[in-house]
Image 1: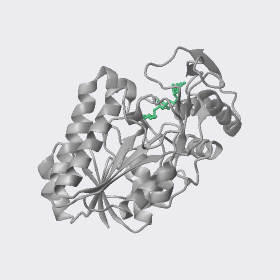
Image 2: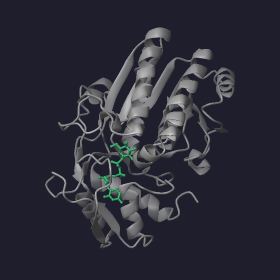
Image 3: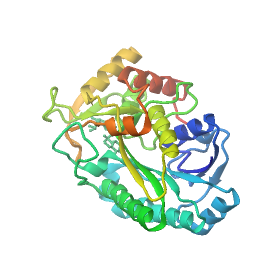
Image 4: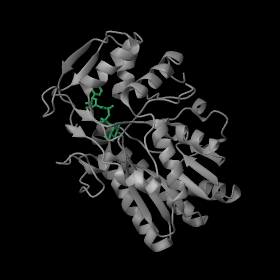
Length: 326
Ligand code: UFG
């Protein structure tokens, strides 16, 4: 297929682009490089542009005869969304709407959308299935939930076929070490811990050890970015006019912050000093996926999402690129 990937120069998007190309699809990346990196596009055509530029998108979709869109372009920092909600609603909601309008205008009605576990808020029950009530607790989660709603309505009214894939904690890097995770500033746990092992930070601060979990630190479900990418590829094949798939993508196994640091110590052989700090606002105690619906629907399984494999791939990338894409 001929596919436009928005945010294809970003972390998850760049890994998905490689999977699409390996599967024989023709791909164009559309990115404004506000978070992405031109180097992450490798040899895939990169078009610089804004989601708000509807005419540019319509022209591109028409001229390249694009058949489907994968939409990764979004801001994704929970804390920032609380202090600057305007930025999140503008880019994630209005930007997505403009993209969908451009698709409608160009008669492209297939889309795979990056959603998030943050749409569930703080669910009482874990693991989290898709039937769990979606009650976000921050503007980031709301922005993604609003786009899920818009997609439902575009499917009903205009025959769009979509998949909204709700990621748990994307992590790791491509096995060949060519692309990986590089956020500026970095706020994600695994890259921060590995920066300590690289000598770029003195220590990692654990955000709270008084949560109702076995060791008191927060539990998350880390899924390898290549497993996420593979799920996108399979979702693309299952899009049906007028219908929407909403699927959780996680490994189904939870690790505490303390356990993640321990695995990083084993993989790197570095002592990685850690200190206890205060809780970070908005962190739910435990988020673990029930991904059985995605497994059945997509005929998909995680292959790389055991934590030592995730950390080893990330460590490989960080050692080879100590300054990221810089
Ligand atoms: N953490 C620390 N110290 C740090 C950084 C993180 O203790 O220096 C902890 C956090 O408090 C959290 C865990 O490590 O308990 C994971 O934190 P991340 O920032 O790596 O990831 P989050 O779970 O907060 O957020 C990620 C994505 C979001 C997405 C969310 C869904 O970044 O975009 O998963 O669960 F919404």
